[in-house]
Image (tube, rainbow, N blue to C red; front, side, top):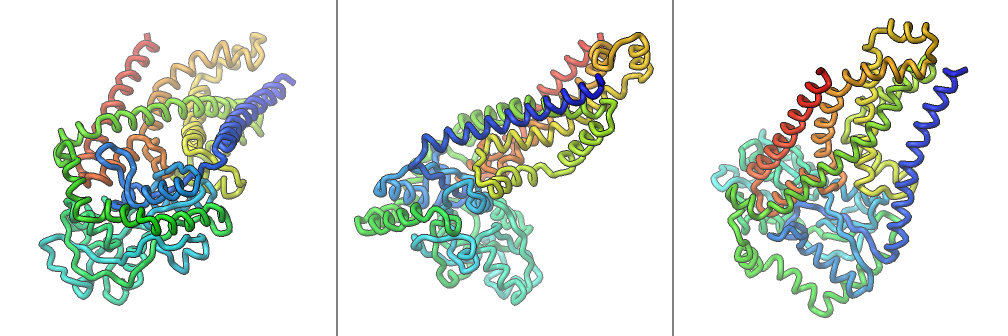
Length: 489
């Protein structure tokens, strides 16, 4: 009878924690909706200058950002810009997490099946770029070679459409910087990108040269989920028409693509971001902010993962077949799923099924709680089971009920065995937060992507971020050893 009662208590507690967590999510979401009736969330890329990028003050600017803000102003609504990356932006629109996206997205017939597009706001074509000293002069020189493209872009579509004709292999990257670096390092001989983007990059210091003329012109459009947010789409079209009529549109284009714009950007650079000291000086505050978000996300994630993991771990040692089976199943599922898949499923998949938005931070915490919680459950279960079984039998023979024997005899010994694993899991959770940049969380890794989008100094920036992670992990490792020594006294 007592065993059944213990099982019921454990299941009730697990259900209560889950309910409270998701109830908090729902309340949070209701609060956002209630206070943001005329505010639209717009997803965009993070590495697509001159259309969207972070300036020397680490504020998002560019043709897309300025157009969206000016249209919102003339049409009387507010916008919340959410820089998540091109692929994540597409998925966010499809799942209903955001209201629309503006990210230099070319209007194609295939995309029209999934999205409703605005009136085109910019026209561009695809060009090929190579290293300045490359022997590749055109498409005919690509046979047997590799070219780099950015996933989901028109450049990628174009490259894939001609790869069989010219006999080259396509390698894909999630952001422009990695694509460019693949060419500069010699792994790929060329890359395909929109002419406006490549021209801007080369003028601002990108060490590549364009060797082909732009392909047939492609049109950029603002996109919403097909059949949804038609009012927003109409407002964008009306606003764009007004901006073209009053001259604001031409001013914005000139502001970011004219020769004066390039000179002005270089003049505004207060430090040289090609050096280590310059990068640190210019980006110190945003790196600290990104680190703070990483640590905060880690702490919150670990708290919920611990609660979830301890409950599931205890279910695994109860003298009940159903409880042990449930525990084993939960551990198996959430340890087996790659973290990135789980994050995308929670952030994009669940809202697509339920119709309810999940804030990126909450989705990140849920992801960590489930994934890391499964690992915690495994070592909680293992720590308890590592205590000699004879001690539980001895306690029970003295008349102690199962629960009391667990609390007074087994757990004090098991906890000592769990502590090193727990601290190690804390370190793993800290590192795993970097994967959550895929859903747009502005933690340390995402901060690095934003900085690189502006200065194109990928090697140095990633080196700085790697050192930051190593310092934090070293401190946590030392803390783990101190705790371990004290427990072993």
